[in-house]
Image 1 (cartoon, rainbow, N blue to C red):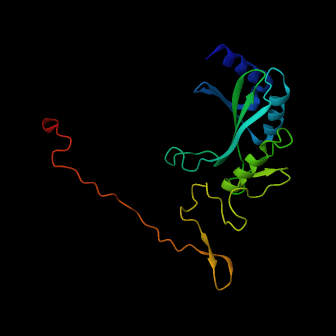
Image 2: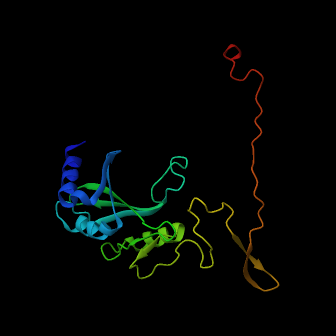
Image 3: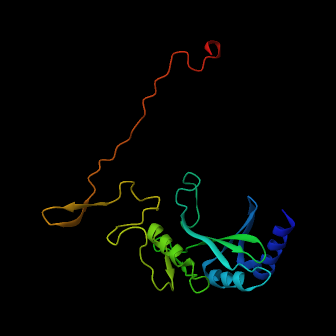
Length: 201
């Protein structure tokens, strides 16, 4: 671990101590995990303490762990992962928080701390169905208003539930059940008889 990351790690442990469920170093970046109840206060401290100084949200996204590790995952299903940048201190941190309820995943919004998290949270809501408590404009941002479900969830069908088309008789766009038949394509591979034989080049 570099001296800079060692300093950041010590600062994180000094401010949060047992509130950190985990602190890991991978690929030259520290990832911390925190519980939902401590999430908002921790993020506020990450921004406001000069020896942390994370003034910018680089990214915020949802994650569905239901098939992680080939289905061996035993923890909560949905997480929100936030990447923060400190320009003043020239370091980054990744913060992960798991939603407590898999049926209705919810975590506090960060829009009052970093206004730029607004659209990131709307995207996580749209694609994963994660609600952000306190968000003042939580609505879909990528799919259309009549869309059913959340397409980045691992149990969402590849073809979706409905399709949209223009109906010339009604002179408007309508929704109808999906007409695509599920199928599996197996590619046909043709090779010479001597393929892979070192004696025949």
